[in-house]
Image (cartoon, rainbow, N blue to C red; front, side):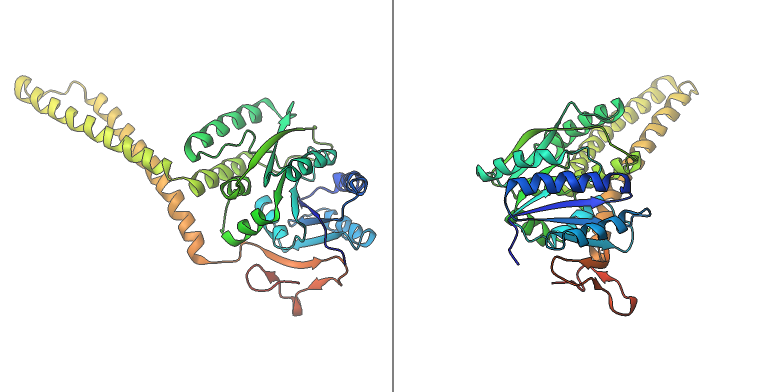
Length: 331
């Protein structure tokens, strides 16, 4: 079997309404490119007909379609990581299944890779998202650039291309939770970004809730920088100095004026503020401790139920046992 030049990785979660159109457009574009390729779909615990449709794709293109079928829902980034462990191409492209990333933009990414770049990120032209998400994205991009020093114009765009060695380094990291584009940029020697088209979602609803977006950015901040801890430490030192000066002021006032009740509510306000700051600091520390806790447990990041590979029979777990990352695999 010919080794593919290109591997396209697509995480799928309840996208039955978009998959057929995606598959037709994707294969049309890649067939026209004239280079050997493979499509690696990860079914991230879909509860609709997505799994059945993916099986059909494998039967229609058995030489080019690989299906990684999760035992449950483990999230978009873990779906990509699982696919990364099974890709065979020299160039790997990631994209969403919701058709907001047009498959017709893939040749642009390949042209940049062939020009000598090892990571090519896309940033969305005329982004078709809600005003809230666009504003939130700009704020988070700005904050991330200041905290991590990773320069990405659009961290939320999934349409990206990586050379094989970058993906191999990502796989070797073996982190429980990570932010793949940022991790790739930290390994890249010559990254670049290009503008790509962005369409409104063709069908279905976005799978990212506000909580998921917040969690994703916590992973980004705590996974690539200790600046939040340093900022809180500096703020704590500053507040401690002010508190000491305030205590000295109250002590002198007590001596000069004597006991007084006036200002008690101000003291309570200051106390509540300091308690709030303390709780926030515990939350920041907790994020880092939580990451350490997840790493030292060494639990599988995801569980694979089966894998449908090109030129291979369906690989299933023996006696109903699931395939887990780090314990079993299919060659």
